[in-house]
Amino acid sequence: MDLTTVDKFYNIHEDAMSEAQWAALYALYAELPGFLGYSDPDGHPGWFNRAPAVVGKESGYEQPYLWVSVEASGLQVGGQLSPEDWATWDSAFIAIASQKLGFPVAEADGRRPLPTGREPR
Image 1 (cartoon, rainbow, N blue to C red):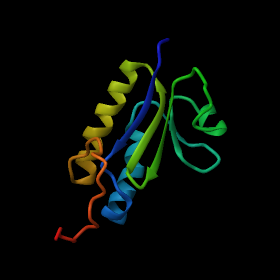
Image 2 (cartoon, rainbow, N blue to C red; image 1 turned 120 degrees about the horizontal axis):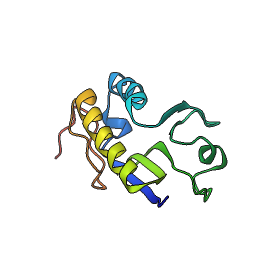
Image 3 (cartoon, rainbow, N blue to C red; image 1 turned 135 degrees about the horizontal axis):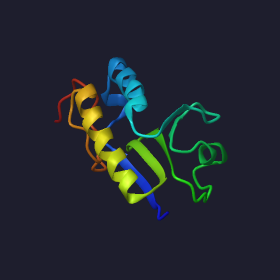
């Protein structure tokens, strides 16, 4: 199976979402293809294969897997999947997250949003 390396950031930022939006995000993970639960030692969600999450992101495993992490530049998704599985997962994530979070989820542009309720100067 040909795998592609996934390393994508989405415009989901810790300081710009409410507690209800975070709860909705965590709940929607189970609706995505290949969800395996919160099984790594740190309690992060995983998809398609559990093993790489246990040994680390740079494991070099030739198995399909995805992990997520909240970073300063947005919600990061990484792993290795077939191009077809990645396209399916990515489009499902964007559609479901946009609906459940109440804003258009997209690839992050590298800029951090202002916290909710703040206007630019």
